[in-house]
Length: 637
Ligand SMILES: Nc1ncnc2c1ncn2[C@@H]1O[C@H](COP(=O)(O)OP(=O)(O)OP(=O)(O)O)[C@@H](O)[C@H]1O
Image 1 (cartoon, rainbow, N blue to C red):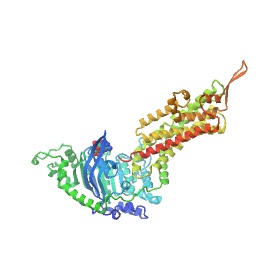
Image 2: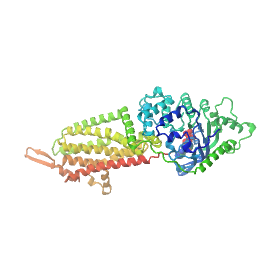
Image 3: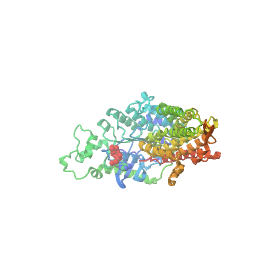
Image 4: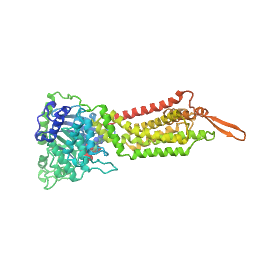
């Protein structure tokens, strides 16, 4: 196996693609890199004594045990039975594992990897992380808009996208939507190539792929692998984990790491592997697929050649003493010495995000709005439900009268019912961050955008069309059908209160959405919170009569603040009277008496506005907490 001479980072022609990205020649550099770089070899990635542990029930489990090797330009495969540590090794090399659990060193061209290595390389995850409502071109344009330097013009970015489409042979389906669970889109192979394209946009010279053929039929898997092989010929180092490739795929491999139980059982040229195992006493029988043979061997299913006597040592230990290992160790030593000469472990300067907060906010918002418009079922249904409920509550409480016997009760009942609808009607806000969690984690870890821009884009694009406008329509319908006080100022205060109730309820749902991974659990927790808030809202039970040590819950109740503000707005200064015709007298109950009985202060304007302020503050606090939770999400595995 030939090994490129290690070069300083800044002199390495492959990495010029990263460092020159912002220059005026960028597109030229990338174009030539992608299409004319057939004579180039990708950078060398070496890994030295890698150990990776995970904590399982307080015990440390060793997942990778002292694995070393060298991957250079070409197709590098990590092969092994299930659970052997393939994905773990790939993640360690790609800088996607929590460094606290990793020991050992990874070097790039014989130098410490830059601190932003993760953002400079491409990483294609096993599951789909493209947006199903967008076309392939739109998905690639999203990646280009966020991951290419901001100073590139729209035309230059488009050129990048076109190049990637051509390179991945996606021209025919470039304008077809990828497809969601509801709508059929492009084929599995095209979808996988779109995922690869999202990473190729930045012209990375190292591309990591976790099981790129999983879920694809044999033919499509073959196409994807030939594509990777041709990418390797244009000066890229392709590294991937793979489970059980067929022969047509195996023969594309240049370099192989065979893992078993977290240890290396072979590392070297894939062409030499058959001979290596034959020398160890395991000749492959004619017509067998080498990949199947190696896996059977690692699982202990292959029979040893009797001429070599019984097997005494595991394959991993045989490899440790082999010439193949000695050869790799020699290469590793050169790279290690080189890194020492350059002063290990100095890190290169941070690369950081390629685009500003504003650009990220705009691009993510545009995608979110497109998503909403192209998948309008939920938003249209929500709007229809709000109109229907508004009409229903209006019909039930139709033109309430001012009598003592029903006027007061109906008004308070209607207010409670409206608040309940607005809070429970926004329960679906809980899916905001759960639904796209995998995409968010991948995109954030790959340097597409800051957490803050994603959060703000999602919240704004959800809050305005879904949590503000439908409640306003609901309020307008219900207010006039019920016949609340016909006064513009009172209608304004009522609407403001109700919109804030809906926003605060949604903000709490966003918090759970950012905190809990499982939709059903998040749903349960949020429903529990809403029920408690409802109990302490002041309608179901007189809060003053509740056990004193439980009364603090009232301070957390959106229901209470909403109901207090709306009750003061509607009842303060109003009288509810029953007229006794026989005795010609009126029996009246002032609205203020009800407010006093409920312990709702109403004497000054502040008594009303403090409730509105409390609702707004709680919404802001919940949003801040949701943002903190999103930041705390584990981006590394
Ligand atoms: N964070 C973790 N916590 C606990 N166990 C882990 C963790 N990461 C990996 N493992 C365990 O380590 C072993 C190797 O996992 P890994 O995903 O790397 O294997 P793999 O070879 O890629 O398997 P597969 O082909 O099934 O995807 C498995 O037994 C897995 O359960």
